[in-house]
Length: 273
Image (tube, rainbow, N blue to C red; front, side):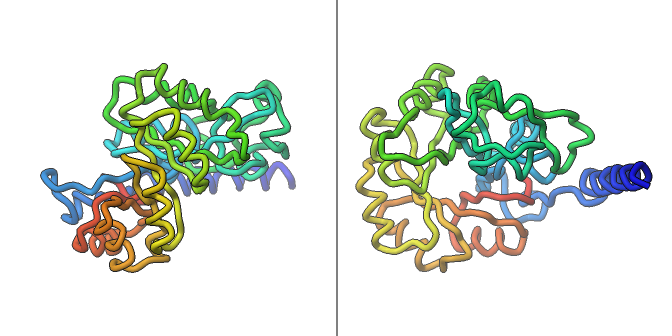
């Protein structure tokens, strides 16, 4: 019985992926007439193209580059032995066949586990947790921008110097952008790198978020939850001299509304350029 159930599960996974890849392709904002080549929407692939590959894996990021996304967002945590690895959650149990807090494990210990779910899993086989270095390597020589969300928190800003140095060592200092909900982290990065583009993550934009973004220094954006805002609240930041990006825009209808309101930078799980 267990063998039959496993076979049925595997068949259903293949069927779902076939639908995603061939019957229901990701709708293109340009193909649907929302944006033009001369005035595009700059789409960020949220955790890579997670509609066609497991999120936050190297195949998902490669797809973002191949499909012409403006950037590919990822999340990073610091291991016990000081290695930045790619994962949205601090514990790997949601997507990997293990139950481990990243900060309590060494990088070698994390390599014992493999991705257990996500679109395209059967196509890509066993996938291990990527390092920040592996993620960055994909973008060298491309136009796609690595977008790195720092998930690890702490007032000592452990590992941030090494993270920024890794970006520069790859020659990506002007191409990469770093994002965080932690104001102090971004202020610290600005103190060690006066030029890197930084995005301050927030839910609803108020005057407080605008003032905090300005406190970081130049070349800073606000990246907000667009559903928690109105066109007016987002425009308030723009009028104050702070550019705005937004997450997560997953329908052509919503992308069209935001585009017509004058916004061009959107993060997505479902749309294609």
